Every structure is written in structure tokens, then in C-alpha cells.
Picture (cartoon, rainbow, N blue to C red):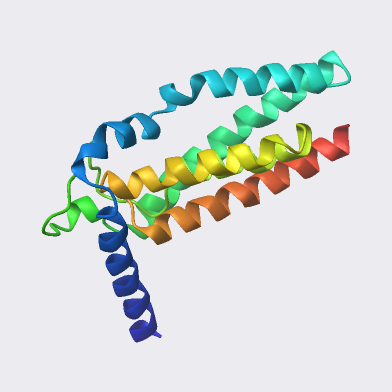
Amino acid sequence: MIALVDSIMEWDKQLFLMLHQLFSASTDTFWLAVTKTFTWLPLYIVLVARLIKQSETHSTWIFRIALCLVGVLLWDQGANFFKELIGRPRPCQEGFEGVRILVHCSAFGFFSSHAANTFGLAFLMRRWLKPSWFPILIVVAVIQSFSRIHLGVHYPLDLLAGALWGILISTILVRIDSQFS
């Protein structure tokens, strides 16, 4: 079993190194912008406006915005909890040769709160907005998650686990919403 885990971790490291070098340093500014929540603020404002417009009642959109806030709390703090619990070092802590580290590098990275938040939001909004929004939100989630590899702070499995956590929590929140709608 330990050999299998070691093999998976080694594969994850090799995949990280390959993906990290997909784009040259000339794209660093783009990836730095993509990773920042502030960059996506206009999208989030539009999502809130669409949520309000498409809600049947005043209490519906207030409840759903509250669920979104709960989601962000669970996605983000859940990631922080598991980072400390599991204690897997980030790639930027490993000293790989040729890896550019472009943002602050904290100790642990499993799993990505960026991936949890963006995928969680995409799957939460999928239930409440028109279907045409879902592909847009998935593309945003993939791009923002990938930025974490380019910036040198997450392995691919960190992103996959974060995405799965986001989807799990959003599924629970959608069920809570359906109980009260």
C-alpha cells in the first residue's frame, strides 16, 4: 500500500513538473492575475445579480447568498483543515530545479482552496442559474486552478481533491436549498 501511495505521489510530482513548464515565464503576469480573487470580482457581482433576478422571492435570494457564504467558509476552511491534518508540502517547498515560485509559499498544500472555491461555486450556481452559466464557471474553475500549478504552489492532485471537496459541499448545500425552497 505504501508503495502505491509513493508511486502516486511521484506521478503527481512528475505531472506537476510537466504542467508547470507548459507556459513560459512571459505568461507569468497573466497567471498571477488569474489566481487573484479580485480579478474575478466583476464575474461574482454578475452572478449575484443573476441570482437575485432569477430568484422567485426576496427570501430565496437572501437564503441562497447565505448558502454561498457558508459554502465559501466550508470550502476554504475545509482546505485549511486538511492542509494542516495531512501536512503534504507544497511543490514550492520541495526545491525542484527550474520551478518558478511566483506567490507566497506556505508550508502545506493538500488540498487547494482555490480549486474548492471555484468548483464549489460552479456546481452550486449550476442549480440556480441558467444552464449556459455552468460551462463558463467550469472554465473559470479550471483556469484558476491551473494557475496554482503555474505559480508553483500546488500539485495536480491538490487541485483534484480541492475540486472534489467543492463539489461535495455544493451538493450538500443544494440539498439544503431544495429542502427550504
